[in-house]
Image 1 (spheres, rainbow, N blue to C red):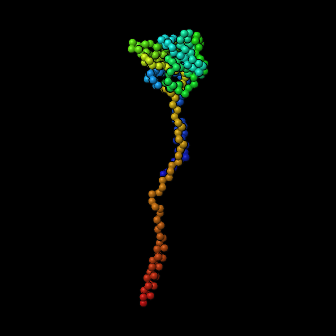
Image 2: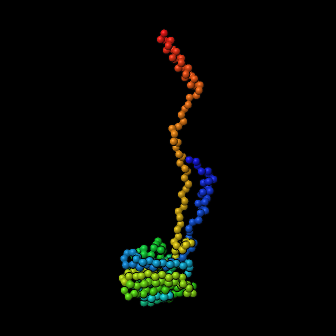
Image 3: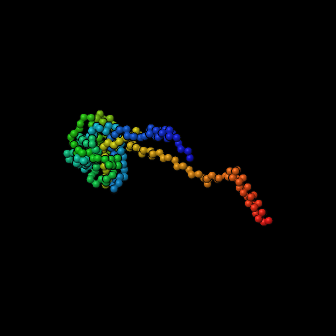
Length: 238
């Protein structure tokens, strides 16, 4: 097998290096909603928008009852004095808003492996320029519920909305925080680097090697020798 010239290999490697790859374009703010009745969610929804560094404030809260906001800085119970506006710290991590403390781990995979926000939620705080979130939990006639989360910017322009169904005795959880976005608006996918080039293995010969052919002079000598031997035998017989 012929080996590729060195300049051909260099061109191929350069083409691989210059080929476009999907990479992170920016961080986006994600809102994940999950609900279920056991150890795994039965419904899941999420949306995102591209203003991850603006503070987010819950300015509307209806029907949630005994929910709680959980961060690395502590738990804020959505009962009694915990009424909007509520600043949810997401500048250095994510926060969860859940129906209770029995939400199964891994129910919001968007934030799996992430870091919870270091600060606790603050009631009565709404910094200028904050994105505004509304959370409502409405009940149907059959006992099931619908959880809806909507987010607008500080001027009331819609940024996104999602809804999920919640069983009569089921749990629900909301995740708020940043995550990387690619050019298509989905999770970042970084392909592995191409493998290093491998020299081709030489193909072994299929024949048994060259066959030696006697030279003409050698053939003549062999013939003369044979004639001499035959003559010698005839002389002996006499």
